[in-house]
Image (cartoon, rainbow, N blue to C red; front, side, top):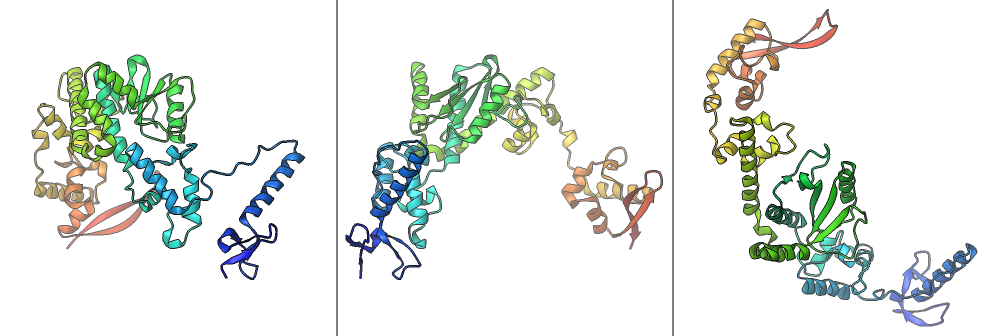
Length: 405
């Protein structure tokens, strides 16, 4: 039997109109959902009255009774109108669409396990919408923001470490004490609030350059300004940058085509900074010259972009010390290590490897053999581990003695 009588309103309704209740014989509550809602409302009003409060009149939610297919239809509608899939922030407080919680409640908790969706991207896929790669979008948007800044500002630093150790803002303009952060969504997230706090502690004002607006207002602070894509486009129109305007307008559909362009952009920026460092030093910069320099890219960043520091120097048109980078001779390295080991009567320590004790540094041994022990074992030596006590420091040191085959 597919129907059931509600004991309160005495109306025969479908069983789907009743909530579940395992102890009952039919597994359903004796009151229908509409009556259960009324009871819940009455209880809330009584509790409010006891506390001296008056509740607002009950208004039934607009999307309370629509089906799963209708919910997915709204996602497709949003995508068609805005040219992109909606985010959870887009639906928050938007009267024209069901809120994100409605989707989560329906597709995470109230559908058969075969139809469940554990996250927002999975819900979009149920509606036939391909989710966006938001990290790729952010990388492309950050690149376009950097290109825009280069047109309007003369002094700027990308990814500066000069503010604080744990905070590397996207762009810093030192002359204006201004930080510009490229953002796409979730503008009032904890991460953004933490960034703003770091900037304020060091006397900077902050601008979040945002790709699109959401229904949320973001962080409401006096020294924080939101600059949206339409405002940036107006600035670019004033100077006739039509190509950059087109890239911004088509970013959500072409964000995955900027990989090579972003890499070339980073290389040009690093090239300019390397040449600036060479001018300051009046010589070719070395790897260590970029340590702890907040107004320059870090040595690690340079290596990640170019593969090696020397490749970056070559790209910048600077000469490198080829003698210092001559190919190491493994046989010389082996002979030096054996001779030093026999002289010491033990396996040398790392700090003992290198001139004047050996021709090459520890890097050569790690590159070819992984460590010193492997090098000796591959060439006919057995390592016998013994433990001795240094009577002056009362400290145990593990020493490796050689036993030739």
